[in-house]
Amino acid sequence: MTETTSGQRNLDQLEPSYMYSVIFKEIILEIHEDDSKSLNKLIEYCQQQKVNESQLKYFQREYHKKSSIWWYTEPIFLYGMLNKALRTLDMECMIKMAFFMRKLHKEIEQLCCEQSDEYTAVFPVYRGQGFSQRDFRNLFNA
Image 1 (cartoon, rainbow, N blue to C red):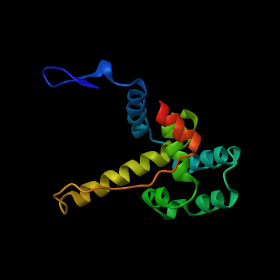
Image 2: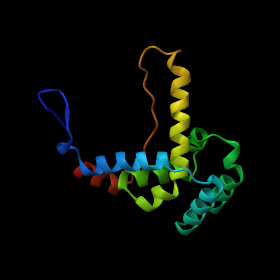
Image 3: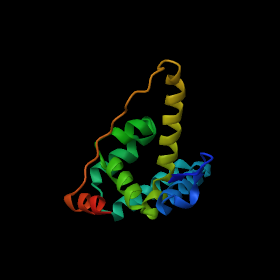
């Protein structure tokens, strides 16, 4: 992305994949759907993707008892599946996970608003990312 002399962003220089991801985010944040139906669709999709059955049952049984932030940090399939879908722009997977992304986004926004008065300085937030060697080489060579 480049800046024009007036300091405005030159939108012609944005990567198409970035623009698509911004548009996709705006769309999923506007959709209102039944979480129970969406959860069932995600479970069906995960079964087709051969996700660990015990993790799926655990997720399905306990999903509504925990926050999306909690689930995102829980060491089960969600974190890896979501991040891979976002990295590879896997629209099918992202659509199946849209209800989860929407809830996660809202919870992070709410947490940020609640804590913005307490913390005046910028502070780093980290989340680990793992790649297979093939995915890392592809990303590195892109």
